[in-house]
Length: 342
Image (cartoon, rainbow, N blue to C red; front, side, top):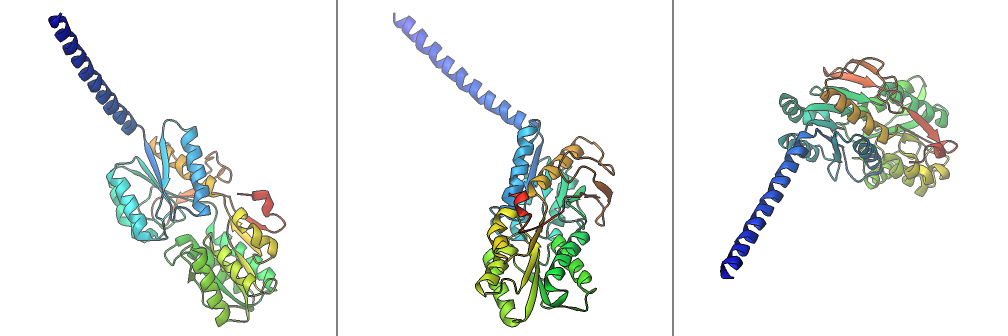
Protein backbone atom coordinates (compact mmCIF):
# COMPACT_ATOMS: atom_id res chain seq x y z
CA UNK A 1 0.00 0.00 0.00
CA UNK A 2 2.82 2.37 0.84
CA UNK A 3 4.51 1.57 -2.47
CA UNK A 4 1.32 2.25 -4.38
CA UNK A 5 0.76 5.45 -2.45
CA UNK A 6 4.33 6.58 -3.12
CA UNK A 7 3.99 5.73 -6.79
CA UNK A 8 0.72 7.63 -7.01
CA UNK A 9 2.24 10.71 -5.39
CA UNK A 10 5.26 10.56 -7.70
CA UNK A 11 3.06 10.16 -10.76
CA UNK A 12 0.84 13.02 -9.64
CA UNK A 13 3.87 15.23 -9.05
CA UNK A 14 5.29 14.46 -12.48
CA UNK A 15 1.90 15.05 -14.10
CA UNK A 16 1.66 18.40 -12.37
CA UNK A 17 5.14 19.41 -13.54
CA UNK A 18 4.38 18.28 -17.09
CA UNK A 19 1.18 20.27 -16.91
CA UNK A 20 3.09 23.37 -15.87
CA UNK A 21 5.62 22.81 -18.64
CA UNK A 22 2.81 22.46 -21.15
CA UNK A 23 1.27 25.72 -19.98
CA UNK A 24 4.67 27.41 -20.21
CA UNK A 25 5.27 26.07 -23.71
CA UNK A 26 1.78 27.07 -24.78
CA UNK A 27 2.36 30.56 -23.45
CA UNK A 28 5.72 30.77 -25.20
CA UNK A 29 4.22 29.47 -28.43
CA UNK A 30 1.41 31.96 -28.15
CA UNK A 31 3.96 34.76 -27.78
CA UNK A 32 5.81 33.60 -30.86
CA UNK A 33 2.56 33.50 -32.83
CA UNK A 34 1.68 36.99 -31.64
CA UNK A 35 5.11 38.25 -32.73
CA UNK A 36 4.73 36.59 -36.13
CA UNK A 37 1.52 38.59 -36.70
CA UNK A 38 2.39 41.98 -38.26
CA UNK A 39 1.91 44.85 -35.81
CA UNK A 40 0.84 48.27 -37.10
CA UNK A 41 1.12 50.95 -34.42
CA UNK A 42 -0.69 54.26 -34.97
CA UNK A 43 0.76 57.21 -33.04
CA UNK A 44 -1.29 60.42 -32.90
CA UNK A 45 -0.49 63.97 -31.78
CA UNK A 46 -2.57 63.81 -28.61
CA UNK A 47 -4.65 61.08 -26.96
CA UNK A 48 -8.01 61.75 -25.35
CA UNK A 49 -9.32 64.57 -27.53
CA UNK A 50 -12.35 64.18 -29.86
CA UNK A 51 -10.34 64.32 -33.10
CA UNK A 52 -8.05 61.45 -32.25
CA UNK A 53 -10.71 59.53 -30.34
CA UNK A 54 -12.52 59.48 -33.66
CA UNK A 55 -9.36 58.33 -35.45
CA UNK A 56 -9.09 55.44 -33.00
CA UNK A 57 -12.54 54.29 -34.12
CA UNK A 58 -11.02 53.79 -37.56
CA UNK A 59 -7.94 52.01 -36.21
CA UNK A 60 -10.14 49.65 -34.18
CA UNK A 61 -12.36 49.01 -37.20
CA UNK A 62 -9.29 48.13 -39.24
CA UNK A 63 -8.10 45.78 -36.48
CA UNK A 64 -11.47 44.03 -36.21
CA UNK A 65 -11.85 43.56 -39.97
CA UNK A 66 -8.22 42.56 -40.60
CA UNK A 67 -7.51 39.58 -38.33
CA UNK A 68 -4.16 38.91 -40.00
CA UNK A 69 -2.79 42.15 -38.52
CA UNK A 70 -2.54 43.54 -34.99
CA UNK A 71 -3.40 47.26 -34.94
CA UNK A 72 -3.61 49.77 -32.10
CA UNK A 73 -3.34 53.50 -31.38
CA UNK A 74 -1.41 55.52 -28.81
CA UNK A 75 -0.24 59.08 -28.26
CA UNK A 76 0.96 61.57 -25.64
CA UNK A 77 -1.43 63.08 -23.08
CA UNK A 78 -0.50 66.61 -24.18
CA UNK A 79 0.55 68.29 -27.40
CA UNK A 80 4.25 67.65 -26.86
CA UNK A 81 6.50 66.59 -29.74
CA UNK A 82 9.11 65.24 -27.30
CA UNK A 83 6.55 62.94 -25.66
CA UNK A 84 5.43 61.70 -29.07
CA UNK A 85 9.06 61.03 -29.97
CA UNK A 86 9.47 58.86 -26.84
CA UNK A 87 6.40 56.78 -27.73
CA UNK A 88 7.68 56.18 -31.27
CA UNK A 89 11.14 55.34 -29.95
CA UNK A 90 9.65 52.71 -27.63
CA UNK A 91 7.66 51.17 -30.49
CA UNK A 92 10.78 50.97 -32.66
CA UNK A 93 12.58 49.22 -29.81
CA UNK A 94 9.70 46.72 -29.64
CA UNK A 95 10.21 46.03 -33.36
CA UNK A 96 6.69 46.74 -34.58
CA UNK A 97 6.14 45.96 -38.25
CA UNK A 98 4.79 49.37 -39.25
CA UNK A 99 4.22 52.85 -37.83
CA UNK A 100 1.31 55.10 -38.83
CA UNK A 101 2.15 58.51 -37.40
CA UNK A 102 0.39 61.89 -37.23
CA UNK A 103 3.41 64.05 -36.31
CA UNK A 104 3.14 66.93 -33.89
CA UNK A 105 6.31 68.30 -35.47
CA UNK A 106 7.77 66.36 -38.42
CA UNK A 107 11.31 67.66 -37.85
CA UNK A 108 11.45 66.36 -34.26
CA UNK A 109 10.81 62.74 -35.24
CA UNK A 110 12.97 62.50 -38.39
CA UNK A 111 15.76 60.71 -36.52
CA UNK A 112 13.58 58.04 -34.95
CA UNK A 113 11.69 57.43 -38.18
CA UNK A 114 14.99 56.99 -40.05
CA UNK A 115 16.05 54.45 -37.43
CA UNK A 116 12.72 52.67 -37.90
CA UNK A 117 13.11 52.51 -41.67
CA UNK A 118 16.73 51.35 -41.37
CA UNK A 119 15.39 48.44 -39.30
CA UNK A 120 12.86 47.52 -41.96
CA UNK A 121 9.84 49.07 -40.25
CA UNK A 122 7.29 50.51 -42.68
CA UNK A 123 6.47 54.17 -41.97
CA UNK A 124 3.27 55.92 -43.06
CA UNK A 125 2.56 59.50 -41.99
CA UNK A 126 -0.45 61.82 -42.11
CA UNK A 127 -0.54 65.64 -42.08
CA UNK A 128 3.19 65.83 -42.85
CA UNK A 129 3.88 66.00 -46.58
CA UNK A 130 7.39 67.31 -45.87
CA UNK A 131 8.37 64.28 -43.77
CA UNK A 132 11.63 62.89 -45.16
CA UNK A 133 11.80 59.53 -43.42
CA UNK A 134 8.52 58.00 -44.47
CA UNK A 135 7.50 55.47 -47.09
CA UNK A 136 4.26 57.32 -47.72
CA UNK A 137 2.43 60.35 -46.38
CA UNK A 138 -1.35 60.51 -46.73
CA UNK A 139 -3.29 63.78 -46.94
CA UNK A 140 -7.07 63.93 -46.86
CA UNK A 141 -7.00 66.64 -49.54
CA UNK A 142 -4.82 69.33 -51.08
CA UNK A 143 -3.86 71.45 -48.09
CA UNK A 144 -3.58 74.74 -49.95
CA UNK A 145 -7.06 74.21 -51.38
CA UNK A 146 -8.41 73.53 -47.88
CA UNK A 147 -6.84 76.65 -46.36
CA UNK A 148 -8.19 78.70 -49.25
CA UNK A 149 -11.69 77.25 -48.80
CA UNK A 150 -11.71 78.11 -45.10
CA UNK A 151 -10.56 81.65 -45.82
CA UNK A 152 -13.17 82.13 -48.54
CA UNK A 153 -15.89 81.29 -46.02
CA UNK A 154 -14.32 83.69 -43.54
CA UNK A 155 -14.06 86.46 -46.15
CA UNK A 156 -17.70 86.03 -47.13
CA UNK A 157 -18.78 86.31 -43.48
CA UNK A 158 -16.60 89.40 -42.94
CA UNK A 159 -17.88 91.15 -46.05
CA UNK A 160 -14.32 90.87 -47.40
CA UNK A 161 -13.14 93.64 -45.08
CA UNK A 162 -11.68 94.07 -41.62
CA UNK A 163 -8.98 92.66 -39.36
CA UNK A 164 -8.60 88.91 -38.97
CA UNK A 165 -6.16 86.56 -37.27
CA UNK A 166 -5.12 82.91 -37.46
CA UNK A 167 -4.46 80.07 -35.01
CA UNK A 168 -2.34 76.92 -35.38
CA UNK A 169 -1.91 73.95 -33.07
CA UNK A 170 1.83 74.58 -33.07
CA UNK A 171 4.37 76.31 -35.25
CA UNK A 172 5.74 72.85 -36.06
CA UNK A 173 2.41 71.47 -37.36
CA UNK A 174 2.98 71.22 -41.10
CA UNK A 175 -0.63 71.16 -42.29
CA UNK A 176 -1.72 73.94 -39.95
CA UNK A 177 0.92 76.23 -41.40
CA UNK A 178 -0.10 75.26 -44.93
CA UNK A 179 -3.73 76.09 -44.19
CA UNK A 180 -3.16 79.50 -42.64
CA UNK A 181 -0.52 80.44 -45.22
CA UNK A 182 -2.98 79.57 -48.00
CA UNK A 183 -5.62 81.58 -46.15
CA UNK A 184 -3.32 84.58 -45.92
CA UNK A 185 -2.51 84.32 -49.64
CA UNK A 186 -6.22 84.14 -50.47
CA UNK A 187 -7.10 87.14 -48.31
CA UNK A 188 -4.68 89.30 -50.31
CA UNK A 189 -7.30 89.28 -53.07
CA UNK A 190 -9.39 91.50 -50.84
CA UNK A 191 -7.85 94.91 -50.22
CA UNK A 192 -10.03 95.46 -47.19
CA UNK A 193 -8.85 92.38 -45.25
CA UNK A 194 -5.93 92.86 -42.85
CA UNK A 195 -4.15 89.97 -41.13
CA UNK A 196 -2.97 90.74 -37.58
CA UNK A 197 -1.01 88.67 -35.04
CA UNK A 198 -0.90 85.63 -37.32
CA UNK A 199 -0.28 82.03 -36.25
CA UNK A 200 -1.22 82.07 -32.58
CA UNK A 201 -0.24 78.70 -31.02
CA UNK A 202 -3.03 76.82 -29.24
CA UNK A 203 -1.43 73.39 -28.65
CA UNK A 204 -4.87 71.98 -29.48
CA UNK A 205 -6.06 72.90 -25.98
CA UNK A 206 -9.52 74.53 -25.91
CA UNK A 207 -8.82 76.35 -22.64
CA UNK A 208 -5.51 77.78 -23.87
CA UNK A 209 -7.19 78.79 -27.11
CA UNK A 210 -9.98 80.50 -25.17
CA UNK A 211 -7.48 82.54 -23.14
CA UNK A 212 -5.46 83.46 -26.23
CA UNK A 213 -8.59 84.46 -28.15
CA UNK A 214 -9.66 86.76 -25.30
CA UNK A 215 -6.21 88.33 -25.35
CA UNK A 216 -6.38 88.92 -29.11
CA UNK A 217 -9.87 90.44 -28.81
CA UNK A 218 -8.66 92.81 -26.08
CA UNK A 219 -5.70 93.85 -28.22
CA UNK A 220 -7.83 94.26 -31.35
CA UNK A 221 -11.37 95.30 -30.28
CA UNK A 222 -12.23 95.89 -33.96
CA UNK A 223 -11.25 92.32 -34.99
CA UNK A 224 -13.71 90.80 -37.45
CA UNK A 225 -12.52 87.25 -37.96
CA UNK A 226 -10.60 84.13 -36.89
CA UNK A 227 -9.28 81.31 -39.07
CA UNK A 228 -8.21 78.36 -36.91
CA UNK A 229 -6.48 75.03 -37.48
CA UNK A 230 -6.39 72.58 -34.55
CA UNK A 231 -9.55 70.59 -33.83
CA UNK A 232 -10.18 72.23 -30.44
CA UNK A 233 -9.50 75.81 -31.58
CA UNK A 234 -13.07 76.57 -32.69
CA UNK A 235 -14.33 75.50 -29.25
CA UNK A 236 -12.06 77.88 -27.35
CA UNK A 237 -12.43 80.79 -29.77
CA UNK A 238 -16.19 80.31 -30.06
CA UNK A 239 -16.53 80.43 -26.28
CA UNK A 240 -14.54 83.69 -26.17
CA UNK A 241 -16.74 85.21 -28.89
CA UNK A 242 -19.92 84.21 -27.04
CA UNK A 243 -18.77 85.54 -23.68
CA UNK A 244 -17.73 88.86 -25.22
CA UNK A 245 -21.18 89.28 -26.79
CA UNK A 246 -19.66 89.28 -30.26
CA UNK A 247 -21.80 86.62 -31.94
CA UNK A 248 -22.77 87.99 -35.33
CA UNK A 249 -20.01 90.60 -35.13
CA UNK A 250 -16.92 88.39 -35.24
CA UNK A 251 -16.64 85.51 -37.70
CA UNK A 252 -14.99 82.17 -36.94
CA UNK A 253 -14.09 79.54 -39.54
CA UNK A 254 -11.76 76.69 -38.68
CA UNK A 255 -11.09 73.00 -38.45
CA UNK A 256 -13.43 71.20 -36.06
CA UNK A 257 -15.67 68.18 -35.69
CA UNK A 258 -19.46 68.47 -36.00
CA UNK A 259 -20.63 67.03 -32.67
CA UNK A 260 -18.21 68.95 -30.39
CA UNK A 261 -18.91 72.13 -32.41
CA UNK A 262 -22.71 71.73 -32.53
CA UNK A 263 -23.68 74.08 -29.68
CA UNK A 264 -21.47 76.91 -30.94
CA UNK A 265 -22.61 76.42 -34.54
CA UNK A 266 -26.20 76.68 -33.35
CA UNK A 267 -25.49 79.87 -31.39
CA UNK A 268 -23.66 81.42 -34.33
CA UNK A 269 -20.36 81.75 -32.46
CA UNK A 270 -18.83 79.40 -35.04
CA UNK A 271 -19.56 80.44 -38.62
CA UNK A 272 -18.39 77.25 -40.32
CA UNK A 273 -16.12 74.26 -39.75
CA UNK A 274 -13.87 72.38 -42.10
CA UNK A 275 -12.84 68.79 -41.55
CA UNK A 276 -12.27 65.31 -42.87
CA UNK A 277 -13.32 62.22 -40.98
CA UNK A 278 -10.39 61.16 -38.73
CA UNK A 279 -11.88 57.65 -38.64
CA UNK A 280 -11.39 57.34 -42.40
CA UNK A 281 -7.88 58.79 -42.17
CA UNK A 282 -7.02 56.14 -39.57
CA UNK A 283 -8.35 53.44 -41.87
CA UNK A 284 -6.49 54.83 -44.88
CA UNK A 285 -3.15 55.00 -43.03
CA UNK A 286 -3.43 51.44 -41.77
CA UNK A 287 -4.54 50.07 -45.14
CA UNK A 288 -1.62 51.76 -46.86
CA UNK A 289 0.77 50.40 -44.21
CA UNK A 290 -0.58 46.88 -44.73
CA UNK A 291 -0.14 47.15 -48.50
CA UNK A 292 3.46 48.29 -48.06
CA UNK A 293 4.12 45.42 -45.66
CA UNK A 294 2.79 43.06 -48.34
CA UNK A 295 5.00 44.74 -50.99
CA UNK A 296 1.93 45.89 -52.92
CA UNK A 297 2.45 49.08 -54.96
CA UNK A 298 0.67 52.33 -54.15
CA UNK A 299 -0.09 53.59 -57.66
CA UNK A 300 -1.68 56.80 -58.90
CA UNK A 301 -5.47 56.63 -58.79
CA UNK A 302 -5.48 53.80 -56.25
CA UNK A 303 -8.71 53.01 -54.38
CA UNK A 304 -7.98 52.38 -50.70
CA UNK A 305 -11.57 51.31 -50.12
CA UNK A 306 -12.20 54.22 -47.75
CA UNK A 307 -14.62 57.11 -48.24
CA UNK A 308 -12.70 60.10 -49.60
CA UNK A 309 -9.79 57.88 -50.62
CA UNK A 310 -11.39 56.04 -53.57
CA UNK A 311 -9.21 57.70 -56.21
CA UNK A 312 -5.99 58.78 -54.54
CA UNK A 313 -3.41 60.91 -56.28
CA UNK A 314 0.04 59.35 -55.80
CA UNK A 315 3.19 61.34 -56.53
CA UNK A 316 6.65 61.73 -55.06
CA UNK A 317 6.41 63.97 -52.01
CA UNK A 318 8.72 66.89 -51.20
CA UNK A 319 10.30 64.81 -48.45
CA UNK A 320 11.18 61.94 -50.80
CA UNK A 321 8.54 59.33 -49.96
CA UNK A 322 5.24 58.85 -51.75
CA UNK A 323 2.60 61.56 -51.34
CA UNK A 324 -0.98 60.29 -51.35
CA UNK A 325 -3.75 62.89 -51.61
CA UNK A 326 -7.42 62.05 -51.21
CA UNK A 327 -10.62 64.02 -51.71
CA UNK A 328 -12.17 64.02 -48.25
CA UNK A 329 -12.68 67.74 -47.58
CA UNK A 330 -15.95 68.86 -45.94
CA UNK A 331 -17.01 72.43 -45.10
CA UNK A 332 -20.15 72.61 -42.95
CA UNK A 333 -22.17 75.29 -41.18
CA UNK A 334 -25.30 75.52 -39.02
CA UNK A 335 -27.47 74.39 -41.92
CA UNK A 336 -25.43 71.31 -42.85
CA UNK A 337 -23.36 70.05 -39.91
CA UNK A 338 -26.07 67.59 -38.81
CA UNK A 339 -25.31 65.56 -41.92
CA UNK A 340 -21.96 64.65 -40.33
CA UNK A 341 -22.59 63.91 -36.66
CA UNK A 342 -19.42 62.43 -35.20
